[in-house]
Length: 350
Image (cartoon, rainbow, N blue to C red; front, side, top):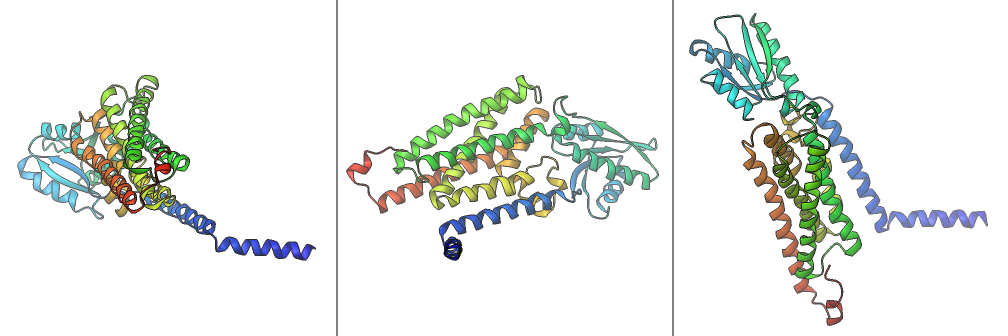
């Protein structure tokens, strides 16, 4: 009897290895390992790479100062000259550069302007690199935070966690609806109904996040309407992209969503370590995924007067448009390939 039970157990176990369930479990394993690789790969050895800074120096020393900084081994900074210290400070306050070095030829002390609101890790990296460079030139440097982080925004991370929360809500609501109602909507009408529901959810979710991070917690104060708008766009982007993946690939679409937004998007978003401190892959894709584009957009609104935010909003809007186009195109094609019976047309449009 015991032998038959063992044989039955072994048979069932072997059956699992050739069942669809096994391939789903194997896919989960791959996603898990990719998660570990991406996060550890991005964060295990952060170092500055061509962090943009500007240099304001007298004409007779400007070229040499820029060349000295750009010739530091490993290229931790990318220095460009500007005409005046006022122009350098303006660039920092508008977020178009991460630091500004003002060289004072009348003394042995220069000034480095930084923007703490853009991320503490970049500030610390710049202070270390520039500090060593100045010491090598037998000069001193004083550090001035021209755009300090708000009191409730420790290390400039509040915007990052806000964006991640929005994106989680966006792809979870799309995934749950697909589980409850089917991965593919029932025709174009069903797709439009589902997309409308996502839009309404995005509006409420965006407002909720803006209220929590602003009036409720005081982490990022002011700019409520602008932050609400960014949140609405991000949530809708995550939901539409998730819906597109599921319309194309069914349940595997959830895995594709996790790869894009969680495995690649989160570590490259510029949270604990902004893009200039990340390795090549994560640094390259940072601005081209809604995670990174969203974090940059929130920081630009809160700390830099919205300067340069257009590119970030365009990136997020492209994901929305791509999700809509793919979903509607694939839904229409499936509808033409398999016309429904009158009885089927009476079922839920979702």
